[in-house]
Amino acid sequence: MTFILNTVLPALVIAAVVTTLANTATTVYLHRGLSHKAMVIHPAVAWVFRLIVWLTTGIKPKEWVAVHRKHHAYTDVDGDPHSPVLLGWKKVQKDNVALYRMALKDSSIVDKYAKDLPDDAWDKYMFGHHKTGLGLGIAILIIAFGPVTGLLAAFIHANVYLAVNAGVNALGHHFGKRPYNNEATNLQWLAFLTMGEGLHNNHHAAPSSARLSHKRSQIDPGWWVITTLQKVRLISLRFEDVRLTPAAKASVSTSGD
Image (cartoon, rainbow, N blue to C red; front, top):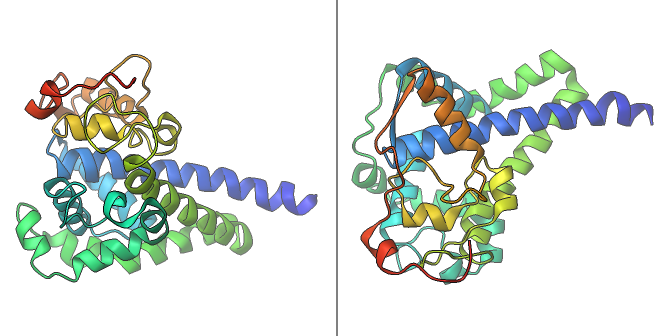
């Protein structure tokens, strides 16, 4: 019982905080900001998001962006890097990271889909070294909370972060509601865990919009972060409202929200 109270519970709380930060940076910065240009983020805030991504995920932003943009270019057809329609949701859930790595074996993918994101000095000397960032992030947890609690928190964070973001690609194209007629789905419980990313059907219906919640009954925590930063003029939106694609406007289904 002492171990649970003194080690496991603190590790769970720490992991929850770290995972929330990682998911916030993923959805606001990597996804809505960089990938879809749905907003312009103040350079200082963008740098903080880059730091969070570097320390908590091991992701190289332009690689993530390239794979994601290819997913939108070939959604659930041949060429999609991680389609559960083609591969099965269980495989995408289990092998999501491997599928990203496989897509990146094509040396042209970054040049084709992320040519607008050239490396800067920060990438060259710091953020481009993704393994260093991930290792430093773990080291910070160990120094701050001790080796056992720190490592346990890092382990929990890594597994939860990977699982829920794989879930967006896997479960979010298989289970859930489809208010718009596309293969993606809305899963509100997954949206809670991913700062809004679980509202995936909405996103595919309006990929250039920063807001993923299209109804009052839908909750998008990432949008709360965006509107807060917008109020203090650290973010400016590309569109103030939700901009549906022509296909989404023409093919709204009646299957629910």
